Amino acid sequence: MDQEISNSERYLRELPIQGGFSVPQNYFSELENKLMPEEEASLFPPVQGGFVVPENYFVQLNLQLEERVSKRLASSISLYGKPVFMWVGIAASLLFVFGLFLYQPRPEKELGSNQKISAEDIAAHLNDVDLSEDLLCDAGWCSEIDKLNIISDSAGMNALNLEIDEDYIIDEL
Amino acid sequence: MQINYSDTELIQFFKDPLRKQAAFKMLLERYSRKVYWQVRRIVIDHDDADDVVQNTFIKVWEKLADFREDSQLYTWLYRVATNEALAFLQKKKANLNVSMETLQEQLSETLVAGAYFDGDRLALLLQQAVLQLPEKQRLVFNMKYFDGLKYEEMEAVLGTSVGALKASYHIAVKKVEAIIKQHLNQ
Image 1 (cartoon, rainbow over the protein chains, first blue to last red):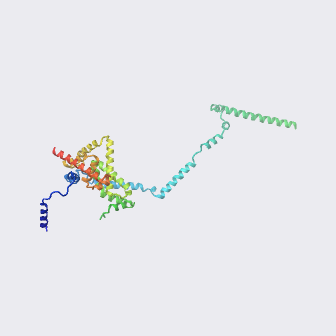
Image 2 (cartoon, helix red, strand yellow):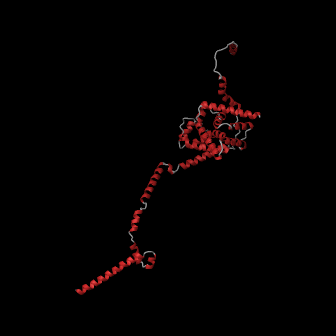
Image 3 (cartoon, each protein chain N blue to C red):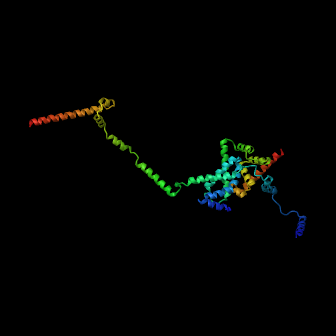
């Protein structure tokens, strides 16, 4: 059978055929360019490129990477990673912030309570604890002490007047 | 006996918190070498390649659960690693305050001086010739010539059409051939 095919081929090739199929201009050079990359690759030796790695490098590399992701996994699986704990944490945080808001000092209230104690009261208190007037004057309370003295003097006069009035009434009776 | 799971199965395991670590280990065993060599050919230096590969796989760990499987796992890995390696080179270029051409010259010097290169004269010449290619052509050449990727796979990695990739590879391979012939004839 092979002999028959071979004979037929020879016959056909030796036929003096001209014309027939044609190709566009420069087709074969362009076809060569299109096909060349595939062929040209075989021109270069199939080398790894001369690059080498340290001994056992890939084993170490895989181990290092496994270790790194294990650490990441461990840090990501914390209590906060679980939904229940996460929501409890959020609720506690909100409660804490609300508590801080409630216990915030209110400046206007504190100012009011300070203002209830007058300068006169302070001076009277200091007088009661028997501080010397000179010391209080040095501290800038002279005018308040004078005022206090006038009040106490007038109180004393009133008491005297009351005594006189009482004697007068007794006499009259 | 280790069962050889498909990439799709690996991704499914990875999405299961209980099997995530085991799936990642299998992924490393399957792809860390390929990713390393791909990165190494881009950044040249072994220590730099090691950094880039580690960053690549940490990103894979973080992002693989979101992988939509509209491309193959390996082309996705290839894309992540290529982007990491290119970003690394850009950062290096900025740190050294040099042009890409100067950086490529430095990479070429690293080849000669580096501890982890034991190629013969022809291997060195080939790598130096590849380093003279523009970045895109260098990527295409490495993927096609060394890794044997198909144009369709390269298209998925680089986002460039098959026609443009063929043209790039054709130009690249001609340049490399010319450089090698020039040196051999000297």
